[in-house]
Image 1 (cartoon, rainbow, N blue to C red):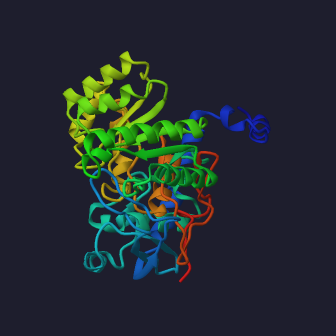
Image 2: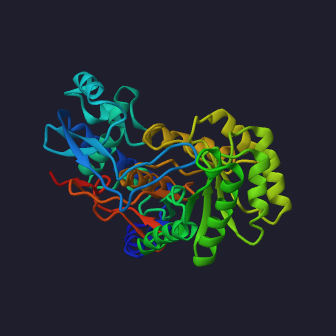
Image 3: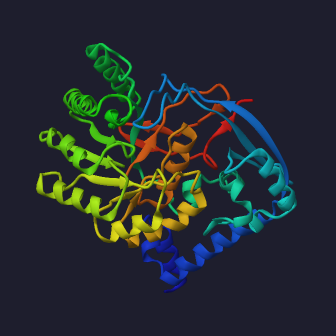
Length: 400
């Protein structure tokens, strides 16, 4: 190709598709090298801790195993600052004391000594997994989803994960149902078009038969009031296979989008559940597991056997970097992801950028929070999907 034709092609909107693959590859390599050089110009200089408070819009009640979940968490946010004044913030994967110990080991190191664009944070710096991803985005002036490889974010569904058993302590069943509906209407107003309903009331809080009856009634009621909303149910291992099928048998006309941890997972029981779903017009219902006592090897086996669809390990507990590395293995074994985010909206944001950057996340757990200490930026839930901020890093800033 002569110079005149090259310039003509380069000036058109479709130039990229007409350029030789070798040129495109060289350009990408050059951009990556520039990014690495920019990161290597920064070294870690200081660390600060800030206590922040997040508040839920309502008191969050019980699930099948645990009592009241409260009004919202208090937590420590870590800020890492470089010799050039750039800083990144985020939750830590460990205590303050451990962070001080680790920072003493990595202070003065180049960012590229503890972080790689292709793979994430090194093992020694795992406690700073989130702050280092945020810091890299700030230095390179890119949102985290772009660091992971997607120029525009992959937009993913987002469900409300805050509809708990706030009815079990009410003697008046009408008031109990009204309480659940109020929560659903509120979450709908906040942009959610998927609701995850906690079920399994009969495991601990009601008699088995009363609990089963209430679970069915709540599921039917929410489905009737919100026909445009996907229904997800989560028993937190509060059922047996036999009783969970009894629950499903009473929901013949209700479309269940996803079933999470109906009982303690085994290959045999999930195979039996999948068979029942396939034979009872619920073939497309997703089966999700891996939050409580995660067993990755078992999950991969169940994925290969097509009896599990979604793996759920926690975004912080398992780790952002580890999730990046795990995603190809999940795909190879027929699994999608939906990292567990319960606790706070920051985890929703982190998973939103993971999903936005590399995909294979079927839906994101949304945990609505308010705070006078943190600005969540332009990360938002809108019309049923999560839209990650295009600001540098995770797009979050401290207000104190």
